[in-house]
Image (cartoon, rainbow, N blue to C red; front, side):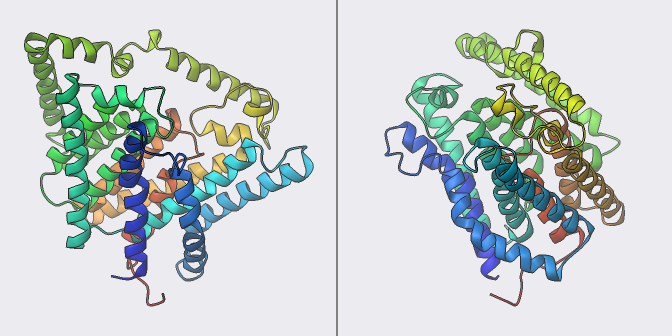
Amino acid sequence: MTFHNYFSFLIYSTLFFGYFVYSFAVLSGFPNFLGGMFSLSLTIFFPIVFVTYIFNLKIESNLIEWLYFLLLFYVLSYSFIAAAFLNTALSDPPVSKGLLLIFYSLVGWFIGRFLTLENHIFRNINYLCIIYIVGFFLMNIITEGNIFAVLFILLDDSGIASTYQGIGRSIFFIGVFTLLFSKKHIHTLFLSFILLLFLVGSRTHILGFVSMFFFYLFLSYPKSSIITLSFVIAAFSVTLSIINIYFPESYDAIVTSRMAELFNLASSASFASRMQTFTTGWEIIGSYPIFGSFGHYFYNSTGYPHNFLYAWSNWGYLPLLLILIIFFIALFKAFIRVLTIRNHVNIMLVSYIITVFILYIFLLEPIDDVSLGIMVGLLTGIIDEKQKNYTYL
C-alpha cells in the first residue's frame, strides 16, 4: 500500500460517501459551508492528481492514455482559445464546463487507476458506508411511511446542496467499485444497488446499473443469463403485486413515480426536453460540422444534447472522434482480456465499459462526469496489469 492507494481511497470516500452524508446533512439544516461540495472537493484533490497523471504518462504511456491526453489537451486549448479570440470570458459557463471535464475526468482516472478495496481495512470501511446508506434509507422509509421518502427529501426546495442525480451518482460508483472488488454475493449486491437507485429516483443511473447487471449475467452465464434475468423480472413483478395488495399507498407512489415514466416516455416532459436538445444539437452540427459552435447552449439559450453529441456540437468533431476511438479500443482490449482470462474482475470491467458507452450514446454528456476517466484508469490498472503502487512518493 502506497500514498496513491490511500489518497485514491480518500478521494473515493469523499466524493461519493462524503457527498451523500453532507448533502442530507445540509437538507436537514446543517450549514451549507461547502456549497455543492463535489466540485470543491475535486478542486482540492486536483493538484496531486494532475502531477501524478503527468508523471504516469511518462512511464506508462499506451495508446488509450495518449488518446485520452489528446482529448483533454484539445478541450483545454479550445476553451482558452475561445476565451481569447471568440468574445468569450473565462468566467462563462462554456469555458468552466471545459475545465470541469478535465477536473472530473482526471480525478476519475486517479480513482480507477489506484483504488483498491482488496485491502481489508478499505473493504470494511466501504461496507460500513454501504450499511449506513441502507440504514438511512430504511429509517426514512419507516419514519415517513413512504417508499420514496428519500427522494422527497431531495426534491424539497429548501435544500440547495444536492440533487437526486448527485446522490444517484454516489450510489452508482460505490456500487461499481464494491462489485469490482467483491468475490461473494455478487447478484445480491447488484440487486441491492439497483433498489437503492430506484428509491432515489435517478433514472440515468438505474438504467446504467440494470444494463451493467444484464451484461454481467450474459458474460458470466451466456447460456442461462436470459433465464436468470427472466426470473429477476418475474420476482420484481410478484413483489409489485404483493405491495399492491398489502401496501396500496406505496404501490400508488411507485406507479406514479419518476421511474414509471421510463415505461411511458411519450408523456415524460424530461424525455421531450431531451429530444429537443438532440434536435438542436444536430442543427448546430449541420451548421458547424468541423469545430462546432462553442457555448451555443449558453449564448443562444438552446440547451445541449445530453449525450456525447455535446462534444461535437460544442467542441467540434475531433473530441467526439477521440471519445469513440477510446471506447472502441477499450472494448476490444477488455473483450480480448475476458476471452483470455475469464474472471469476475475482467467481466465487471467489460460490463462497466459497455454500460458507460451506452449511457454516453443516449443519456450522459461528457461534462461533469467521472465515468470516462475511471474507465481509462481501470484499463491501465487491470488490462495492462500495471501495479497499483509506485516506488516514488
